[in-house]
Image (cartoon, rainbow, N blue to C red; front, top):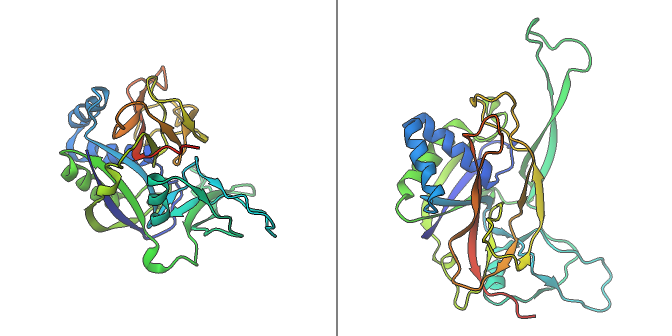
Length: 303
């Protein structure tokens, strides 16, 4: 598999985090809309055969990557501030960390790339067509880039691994840009444009002496995946798409490993790990949930 980078420019704040499982679900709905149910079923069957047409990362801030969780801070004497780990590393620092893992120098503050806010909305009474009385307000969380981030850098990078399906994933991303991404897209949240055609990222395809991998996506490990590593967890309650014929909007509770999680391997590093989840709801077994790791080869720290 070869790796490519797509650049997406958000046109508005977004109310759904740009996580790989949600992006994949949105792309599947676009495939269903464009090509029909049979095409979508054949597409998903390739994942069950361990031959996925493509693997996607979380959408990451342009030029930044999640901090590898194996990194540690240098213990410097005489610091006059409380040292903490960053959430993000610049690309050159990230690439250095997977080639020659070392320790980070403490800093009093690290760049904050995203900001979160909450917007008030009024629920509409379906019978009267108005907002009704008191107590009908609710909050919707949304995210955007910090004002300090330069305007030209307020983009997201989506990384894709594929062999023969670059045209397919490009068309699906373009279709998603037309529809919008995530919650509240009907009122403009999650609107974005594709600003750059797919660009090769050869440095993600291999590292000399690689004996581990770091994930750039939230994922769920498969039973045979490596277990020697470092990781952090996220528990979420994923929802079905708006058109899913389910009795409930929720698929259930799901725990995933966060981007930055890393594992040592005993064999050649694979392009992906994890699995596609099925049967999350016994009453509605057809839907699937994306749980594959976008694996970047790395050298495991010797210390």
